[in-house]
Image 1 (cartoon, rainbow, N blue to C red):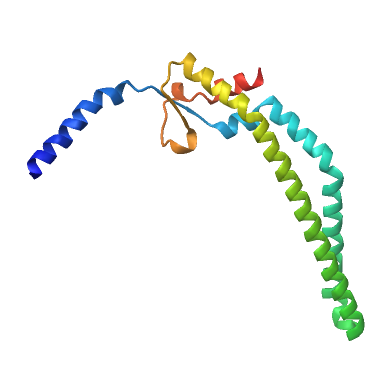
Image 2: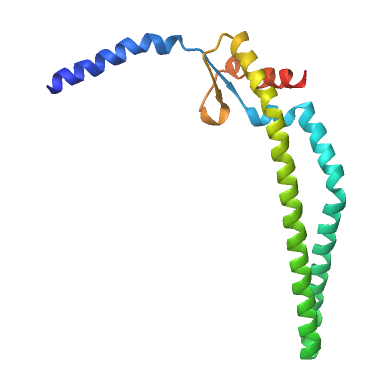
Length: 165
């Protein structure tokens, strides 16, 4: 029985080998192509412009908290307990403000990035489909899933060109 199962497995490997040899596979780095595209660069500039004031506010709160901490460390030993407690409370309040502002900014930026990715998805899918057809491929894999690829089968640059059209 074992011999029969081994023969059947061997036969399956031999029969499937020619089919696997005919499979044409391309590789793309989707992240690199998408984030190097003209659309992504324009989005990045818009994002920077839209949130520059918010980033400045976060940096301001961070700097104020740092100054309060430095003052507390430097002069805290010379202050009476009431002054030290008041300064420590101010510091804690500034840290809370910084954390709130930073979290709000990060959340808003992440939401905008997600919206960009969702809006870019149809264009990426269409460009990948064009690559499949132009190169007569059966499969396109993301570069993260591949250990090695021949340079001629790495289609990232072609994908980028299609995205920039």
